Length: 231
Image (cartoon, rainbow, N blue to C red; front, side):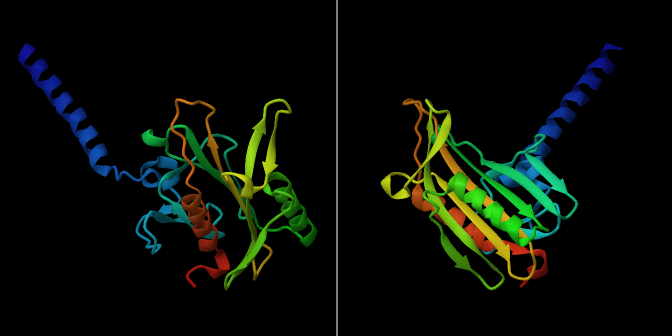
């Protein structure tokens, strides 16, 4: 009886060990691919042509974009929302690195598919109110989309309990925004990217403006709406 018990325990231990080994072998080291929720939206086989980015296919099926591999999407209630093929909202945050653990990098994307002209104007105005310094922005255009993008410095004012928007030319830029419109439909995407350093001198928080500006520019330029996919 004891012999069979020992054999059974041995088989169980080997089985559990095998499960952990399989899980380890299946891990890619890329947060977007290894994160269960995020990976549901990623086409790992598609070639984006840019290292570190993976093809993201929206839950609505209405757009695609290059998704940065170091980021993971929140799957908590309220952080991801979808309404048929008309609306989609998600938030993503960069997996924290030990050598820069005082920095939080995150972006939010909101897709809206059936807004009229006035509603689009209001969305753009609200974006500027939230992220733009003195309504400053620049236009951009590709073959299938056009829009506006900009940057600013956001500093939280403890006394007034609100974020103050400052001129990006006066310090380190930590907020980026874009409003993207499909040339062939009424679809729009609003995307914002924020970087926040903890107020802790023991944390090694460094914002690389060139790297972050390049990442954000690539994301917005890679967006393709459903009627333009594959072009």
